[in-house]
Length: 162
Image (cartoon, rainbow, N blue to C red; front, top):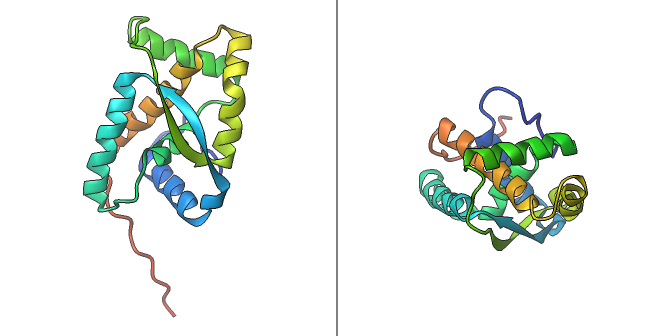
């Protein structure tokens, strides 16, 4: 699975979620647990979207980790762009958020490896404690895009024609 350009135009979020779901279902041994701290309003919104998507798609196997994985695959790779994303997230909230709540999510090896170093990278470039806002901004961006695309539908069934 390759991350798409975070600035690419057009619908992307439903496909990104489906890709994460499929990757987990097909290659679950390549997924591992990582503790992502999200600010409470983003965490609550993720929980609500998951519930709605389970209903609309009739997919009871969807999990929060699929969303976190899809979101993290689209964060910018450059530290300057990551800091800009944090800044935008903080500006939208007037510089204040409730303290983040830790949660463990199963994510792909690629996301796990990126997340492992992000706190150190962001701390070295700016200051400690900002990575929660990068994680939250990434998830919020995914949820915003999903809201624009509407309810998550049931995946189409592909049948090979002989």
